[in-house]
Amino acid sequence: MSISVEPSGQACGALVRGVDLTRPLSDAVIASIREIWLEHQVIAFPDQPMSIEDLKRFALGVGPHGDDPYIAAMPGHAHVVEVRREADEQTPIFAETWHSDWSFLPSPPAGTALFAVTIPPVGGDTLFANQYAAYEALPAATKRRIDDAMGVHSARRGYAPAGMYGEADKAKGRSMRIISSESAMKTRLHPVVREHPETGRKALFVSPGYTIGIEGMEREESDALLRELFAHQVRPEFVYRHRWTKNMLTLWDNRCLLHAATGGYQGHARLLYRVTISERSPVAAAH
Ligand SMILES: O=C(O)CCC(=O)C(=O)O
Ligand SMILES: [Fe+2]
Image 1: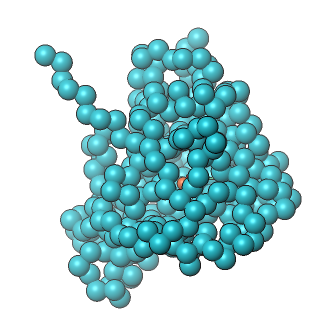
Image 2 (image 1 turned 180 degrees about the horizontal axis):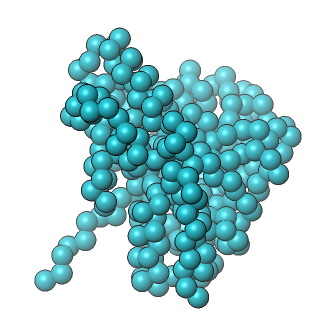
């Protein structure tokens, strides 16, 4: 079997066929998959009836398991979480705001793998926005303004007690096991323009989900700049709309993409299994 790649024809994204993810992959196949992933930023493998063990093994091929703050792991699977929504659920849709996963952490994850268990017949697409393209398309004056700037990231909009998934939401009967926390008020700085550690390309690294300011800038000025960047970075020409099918495994790169969940499936359940992937430790050069 040889690997085939079908680009989405949109700003990023490709379907990958010709590999069986229910079996261990050779190092050569893993290396090819990582290459395809770095090129297309988000790749999806349709028709892979994987077990949770298969999912964990696949993710480990891409990079070490990462942590998931504020979401409880599945019992017996320390690094797998359920993205679950019941058919009759009324709480806010999880992750509907554009974001790069857990960018408020000191070392945000490199990637995320998400496996489709139950997919509604309508709605529930995931949107991805190419942040290399977003950065490249900025006016030169804006690039100069942000090239050395540091963004202030925080989980507070979502996970602080008064946040989107806070105490009030919990009372409504959320199916996802989200643990809102005081610690979500902490902040962390990351470059507004980051260099991707594997491709060396520059990408915009702010998001309406987790970026709450620009270091050293007056509130009014940083709010205005962030509003401008938030509007720019998800313009339709940078966006790929990902349609799920049951048994599809999707792998995205958090270092050069934003993503957002969508609704539109009221009355239907949706369930995916998720593994966060951290940066690979640098490998020593061969002598
Ligand atoms: O449910 C989705 O479509 C995306 C969820 C998400 O943002 C995530 O799992 O990181
Ligand atoms: Fe996410």
